[in-house]
Image (cartoon, rainbow over all chains, first blue to last red; front, side, top):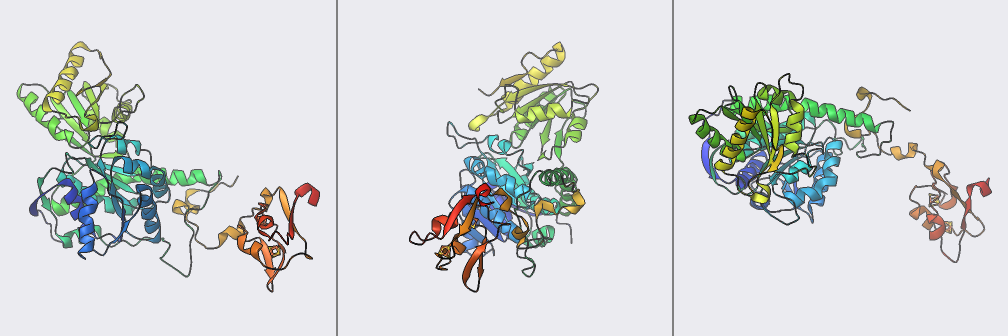
Length: 395
Length: 97
Ligand code: SF4
Ligand code: SF4
């Protein structure tokens, strides 16, 4: 097909962009239970269903546990399945998330990141998807509305190739509700990119030869299935790269496993997820003007963890701060901190790494906050010592 | 323990055949064994409906006994057999042998 580089520009919120992507994909089944701040995804998508713009079977269920259960049933039957949720909704799906991945069902879920109660809060942080990081789902994090939209298409391809479920994460309110001028892809090109879904096995594929899905396995078999799953997750890294490269070639927008900004000659850097990356880039630009060698590393793919790529990106730096919008409550920094720190352990001359927890429950993270982290890092380089390895900031 | 390698096992634990619960014998779990009193049984087949393991053997519309390879001794048949009939008694495996 022809390369479609100059796509139509539209002002869309993150939620409406994801709903539009779902409409263009036209999945077979969408079981959903709306929850703030992802509500508008399902609200908008349900109007597409009501208006007959998609053929999707929209199943309105009584809880997120049921939404994921119905997704599993539909995917096992051979359907292309998509849903969306946030926060408590993802937490309620938790039991079923593991079943979706263990059964190797390529479900695509958009998670609009929101804090977990208590205290109850509807605003952005990453504690919801961080809690699901070991559930066997591929996790893609999106900085902008544009990337959230693009990631949904790539998620379908990745999921169906490695036969693992994929979670696309974007920041609640900051990305889900902010209008951004972004490029859309034509329906025909979306259909061409995602293609038709023809699973090798499914419950409805061959009615003459029924199959069983979800049987019990005991110690003699269980571990082998987990090893297969682990290998599929490892393979997913290459598939994310391949699919992202094909997407870039077709639509002109490039996405890596990581997004490096001014890292080449940097002494210090912030490692971060999602929308706060942009804020940090502004701080980098301002500090660069003053002559400080600072940079940013954004993690786009967190599951599987591109550990070798993280190590390569941070090689040669002197100090790094991992900014987590979630706490592991382990008295040892956030999840990003622990995984990045572990990824660089084998570097000969590794940078010092500190953990800064920011922006919980939607607390603002401003350019000044990023700047003060860079100042701390520069001080670590100057003195050669880390005074506080873990700390809450923006408080 | 069976050592099955990756190639042999279908992804996601899918079993490529139906009705395979039949080949999984649950009779070994049994502590209590159902014993039928043919004299009392009216062949109402309530036990056949209620047995969770399809372990009630029926021939020509008549209850003829239990499939001991699959009966796990739960006693549901005994409980469900109508109170006025009580044609099934649960006895311990040692006693039965
Ligand atoms: S004891 Fe339970 S398993 Fe055995 S025949 Fe009766 S109902 Fe079925
Ligand atoms: S429930 Fe009792 S009476 Fe009825 S068929 Fe079974 S054993 Fe006979």
